[in-house]
Every structure is written in C-alpha cells, then in structure tokens.
Image 1 (cartoon, each protein chain N blue to C red):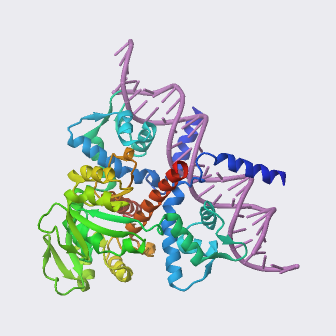
Image 2: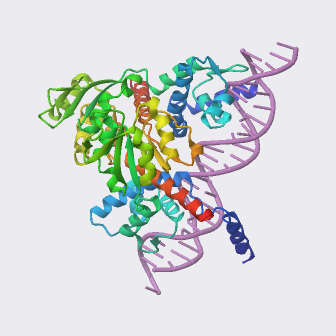
Image 3: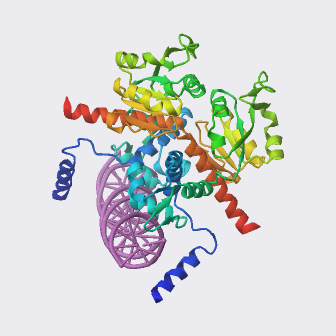
Length: 235
Length: 235
DNA sequence: TAGATTGTTAATCGATTAACAATC
DNA sequence: TAGATTGTTAATCGATTAACAATC
C-alpha cells in the first residue's frame, strides 16, 4: 500500500512541469512502421489482431509491441487483442497525421518534382500549397497541379498562409539560407533533403533529415560485410 | 603481462568462428555521419582533430567517438588526435565506398530520374549502369546520360553485368516482383524506395529501405509534440 | 467459468558515458 | 620531459525481453 503511494507520488512529481509522459525516441521511430502494417491489415479487411500475431508479422517481440503501445495508453483489451481500426486511428492521431498540416516545397528540381507528384503527403493529411524555385522559366507554371512561385516570395507566402512544414530540396549551398527564411517566416518543421546538417535547432523549428547518401553507404557496408563473411568461410 | 595475455586469448576465442569482431548496428548507423563531417573538414583544409573538438561539432560525447572508432582499430594517436584524411579514408573503406559497386535503377519515374541526376552515387564510388522501365516511349532514350531499357531486360542485364546494387523506385504493386527478379539475377543489395517492406531477406540479398513516408510522419509528430508542449505551458 | 491476451513489473541485455592509465 | 589525447576498462543508464497477475 504505502509503497504504491510512494511510486504514484514520484510519478506525479516527475511530470509536474512537462505535462506529458515523455515517450522515448526508440518508440517514436517504430510507430510509423506499426502504422504501416496496421494500415495494410485494415486494407485486407482484418478486424482484430493480437500482439503475438503482429509480432510474427513484423519480426519483433510481442513484448515490445505491448510495451510500445502502452507508452500512450491501453489500446488493447485483455483476452481479445487490439482492434485494428481503432489502433490505426490512435497511432494516426498520435503521430499528428490528423492535424491537417500545410507544406511548401522549396526547390523544383527532380526531387522537388518527385515529391510534388507523390501521394505521400495526402495520405498523411498534409496539403502541399506551393513550389518555390529560382528558375524564372518555371515560375508561374504548375507542376502536378501545384503552382510554382519565385523563391523570393517564400517568406511572405509562409507567413501569410501560416505554413507548417517546409520541404527543402534545394542544392546544398542554398539550403541554410532557405531554411532560415522558412524558420523566420514561422514554419514549424523542416523536412530536409539537402545532404547537409542544418544548424538551426535554436530557431524554434524541428528538423527531420533525410540523408539518402547515408542510406546508400549503409547498403554498401552491408553488401561488403556479407561478401567478406561468405568469401572468408567459403573460398 | 599475464592479464594481457589472458585478454588476448579471450579475444581470439570469441572471434574464432565469425572472423570479424562484429560491430554493433548503433555504431554502423553513425558511421556515415562521421564520414560526412570528416569530409567537410577535409574540404576546409583541416589536417587533424581531437575527439573533443569533433564531439562539439557533432553534438555527441567525445567518449562515444573514441569508442565508435575503436570498434575497427586504433585510428588515432595519443596526444595528437585523429588525422582527418586518414580517418576519412578508413571510414570510406569500412563502409565499402571504395569497392566500386555497380547499380541499376528500376523505375524511371520522378524519383528514378532524380536518382539518375544526382551525384550521390558517384561520390560513393557507385556506377549507375542503366535505367529500366515499362514505358515503351522512353525505352532506348537516355536520361541524364543513363540508358533506359525495358524492364523485361532487367534479369539478363543484371546477370550479365554482375550488377551489385538494384535501386527500386517502381510503384508499390510492382516492387516485390521486380525485387525478386533482381535477387534471382544475383544482385547483392536492394535499395528500396517503394513504401513497402520486402520480404526477401531469405534470398541472400541485403535490403536497405528508405521509408520517406515514415520520415514525414516523424516530422509531423515532432511538430505536434512541440506545439502541445508550448500551448500547454503558455496558453 | 475457462481461455486468451493484455498491462505492467522485474530481469536481462546492450549501449552510452565517465574515468584514467597508456603513450605519443 | 610535460601536456595532450587516445584506447580501454568500469560504472551508469536506458531499452528490450521475460514473466505473470489482472481482466476481458
């Protein structure tokens, strides 16, 4: 009895100033993957799933699944498992996918166009409002239904439209300046595809880096390591 | 003396069957980032750096840097620090960037074209040999200097040219089939941009997934969390 | 009720950090 | 040599897994 009260007291104390029970980074990184699998199950018309079955599907332990989902609240039901639709929806909420954020894409090069074309944003409730580029010859045109503005208009546009997300697909040299423009215009998050690290953590903006080059290197490493292991034992 | 021998003995014993001292995943994930920072320092003409200085630059502990670099071997020198050029080169080797791998890109859509255009591959010693697509109207043309073939030729091409890396930028539905074709044709690694998980781990092929959608979701989460924290305390 | 499966605590494991002796 | 800085061991911290009581 007494010990339970003590634990409770400690818990409340711990969360007095930062309200929410902080969720570890490791868990957050896994959430989109859960979301993807649950979305697929939903599309297959499945209604419910147990942590045991999901664990087999996803190649993780059932323990981890239960632990992860419990960081946020009890989404399951003993003896039954998890309702897929409900769980999928809850994770959507949690990840902010239901917030209806707006985005602009800075840089209408190949990658910017590719991002303009995908349904990736729409699927996650993000609306793309505009593209921005320095190339006068495309300013005023539309790319996949998205209007192209001159990069000089980026600041005013973001401020006026209260843009939440700035997608950065400009060349490396321009990245910092454009990121700063976005940050000062009140953008809340920057999705950074420029292969450089943005040192603007201070500016009240969150940055998510997509380092594709790093990914390619990891692939090379895996290939090399596997080759060596096989060559070492076989030949 | 005796204790050193003992340690050595243990080490050799531990590595008798799997040859290389396995490096943890956490370290591998960090290596490309070291490589990037060292490359920048090199470009700036810097010669040497201490773990302390690098730690400030990269926002990690000096301890971690020394620990990480020591998984592979003593690249530093007491009282001096690390020779940037040497260390950069060593990490390049380690990551397999100096292996001169070849690659093909399956899917000449927006993303495939974007990848055809970047210098990302060349910078990491990877040569792009060809693009493949189903669209007859582009088969036979060149995109950014890379020849486009019909996807039906993918298998023969990979086998004939002993292609090491298959880049997968085809639509989700086609991903599995194309990946299988690559795997059977002897490709060693698949760089997967299709927003689906490939269940071909069995096929003797390593897969590196680039889940851009997951990244976008994490950004949304960070924005939402930050918003709530601020709204919670201020308003 | 009995069976199933979660939520949650405790045990294990691994990764990060701190400290310092080795050595350039 | 003295100062600097690594390589490496030990201590800490956090994340994963195992176990089981709670409960649907």
